[in-house]
Length: 91
View 1 (cartoon, rainbow, N blue to C red):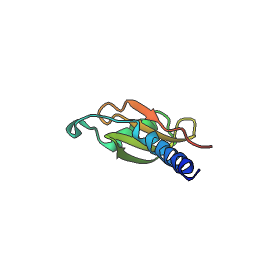
View 2: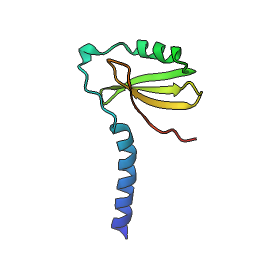
View 3: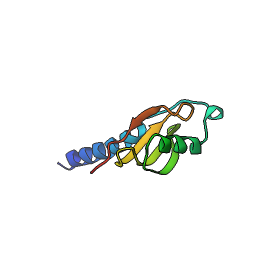
View 4: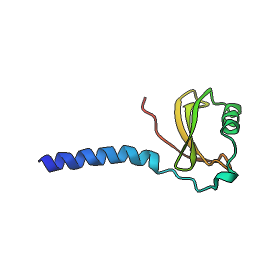
């Protein structure tokens, strides 16, 4: 029983880590556009607030409130600003 609980705990922790690790961008850093350009683009596209832009797995990871004013965590290609993926937010 103890090993079953250990296995379930490991799978649960691994699943949350996988959610952030499933998005990956392979772009040479010399080709990246500045983070501020992505922030400005998202605000022009209707995001209500961009709280943070950081790098995760070679992508720009953006936290904020999207055009629907919903909490958002989305990943963008740093060269093209193409949406790579999003993490479903809890309500």
